[in-house]
Length: 303
Image (cartoon, rainbow, N blue to C red):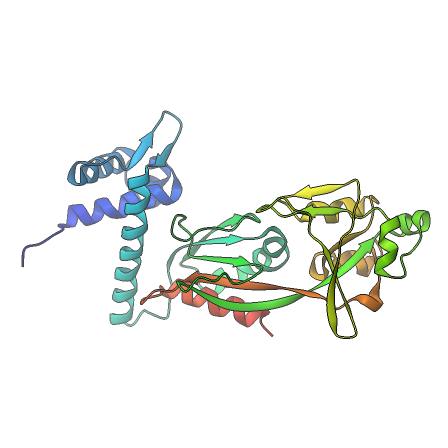
């Protein structure tokens, strides 16, 4: 059988993938222990072989072309499978390695996942981790992420969904605000209060507050002069400043509640939850680093 790739071509593909991951020829060169010129030559060889431009180059940065992104998606997965195959055959499959790219919503990133990443890397030091923190959904077909955490599992048969937790919601305010404006006794009382709003990034619609009574959850539309979008933690910061009431996840404000910076109200109507789900593409071969990270998070947070 005629060889499709020689050692030089495989090395060029590795350097191309590292440059695409780091968005820099220089950073890729440092990571690979070669010169930036060597990375540039490797990419040029690939472009000549394929007959397409893989990067748009400027004096300050590089970025993938549409063809480059498609090529990166395929070759990155192929290289990961080669690494896993060698580790499995050589008896090293118990040590995940390589770069892991994760997309996380803001609250879950700061209060759940980021704090435990050092523990994961202590257990698996050969895994490098890139985190993308945003409340916008990612498209695994277009974006170069291995996993994402989101509030619900989409109707997509190409994705595997693992439930992490149902996070409890609480309504909080500062003691000073409650002295000034009074303590609401029921969700109906919120109509006369300053309720800090959060707007969904996907639709721009303001998120209703959820409550539970007699085992049933129900939504209440609130209003207020303050609104945040993109970063849900902005509402918690406003609440700490005395701007009004805010509904957020208990894990975001548990320290504030403990030290008295914030006070929980409407406890009789508490207990409502919102889910967090770990998503990753359904593939015949899931890389060992992805598998290890999935099991790590599920073990940490799933009931």
